[in-house]
Length: 150
Image (tube, rainbow, N blue to C red; front, side, top):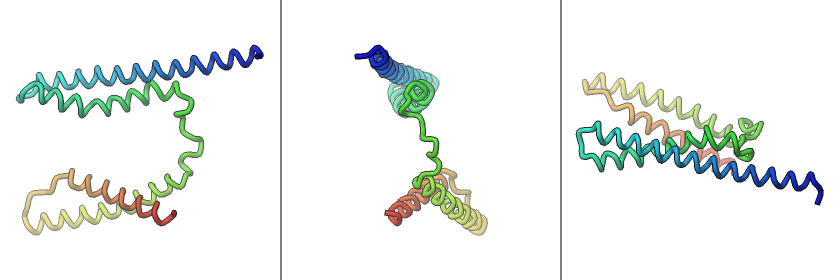
């Protein structure tokens, strides 16, 4: 075995070890962050401590884990780097096309809802409803485009 091969094997081993440590650090940071946010919400809220703590900790853990993965693990993992031409993939084209159609549909729905609330003299609809409509519309359009192409 040549010296170059040995040093290459050592380098790959240390890279994998570095990736594991980065992942462990990211998960530990996510756990500490979620527990901290849960504790703050439990102490600051008017409700019982433990249910509030659990809900906030469970809800924030995936978000903090994803962010810590982006900041800590991705720069260390060479396999996690996106392709140079990722934006030119067929999936990206489907997402763009579905997004354009969903945006137009959402503009129409918002206009109809605004007109209906003005005519019927009702309170405005919650914006979460329109967010859900937009997401479901985009998802359905993406699935239809994917189904048509295959």
